[in-house]
Picture (cartoon, helix red, strand yellow):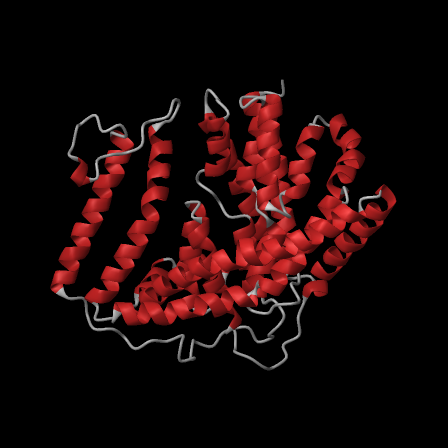
Length: 450
């Protein structure tokens, strides 16, 4: 399906650009998008990839990934019946989902790419997305977010009296989107049109992991001092978490060396919102320190293993460059040619009849294509209509409950050389559409359409 979408964007951009006299803008956008794919996305991603693949290797070598997979085996087995329960891919999937829920994009993407690599090693048809891969992509393109941090920050910066008002609506919408994505991907994979024929090559989807990188020798038992240090570390983070929730302004006047200096409380911010924000802020330091200490306490040579895992980061970043260039150039050309505005003009009168504001159409159309462009459009809407308007809050809910589907597909599938995406695109767009519809309906019910 990506073949048709990509070609359609290119041809539509050229035809519209020629008809409107915007060929120069279209040409400039082509080269700017190609440059951004490499310089703005791929190269910075290499550093994040190196960091998180190094941490993942520590978790794998210490046996922590296998522990996580065993704990969450029942729900994962329902979602990924093709993947052995004790396979390292399960642990990587769990960590990716957790990072997405906390809004840790810089950690979620590398962890997701590692999970995709693990799933590819079980794929009996290299180059064609397996059912497990499509399910994983559907979960990523519709992943539940506990707090839409970007949208809340923009509303707060614009002077909203209650910038966190959209957290509840976004959570409800993103939950519905995730459920729709999972139902769609599981239903579509049964259709004959999306069926795949087993080539008889590659790894078996039901065989246990056998590759040398998949199964590590069991590490030594945990040292007693390791348990003590891990306990102290957990207590410290729990203390910092509770302090951020109960006493964000440090009214207890605790000394600064205890880490008591927290951010001031924002107006309208409830305790559970502070809890989610604190969890997001503490998650990355906790993951890095806990995984490293856990591995060290089990006899893993942490520095050497971290470096070995980090070496893969640059290679993965290089592999996804062609896929990033392809999708970003097509999207950039379509935008420069006025395609977004034209589609909005066509659909505006129809959607106005059912009460859907035409001002929201650009965000709905751009969201699956470009995260940065969507954020810019949202900021413009907030400025034009006010941060507490129905349009601004609905747009923020849409931003927090949908995903850049085509970008995610290009990066994740590109990292393992998948060219035939099967039903992953349709499942992702189904989740996006559900997120938009639910966002509008729930915001209309909660905030009114005035």
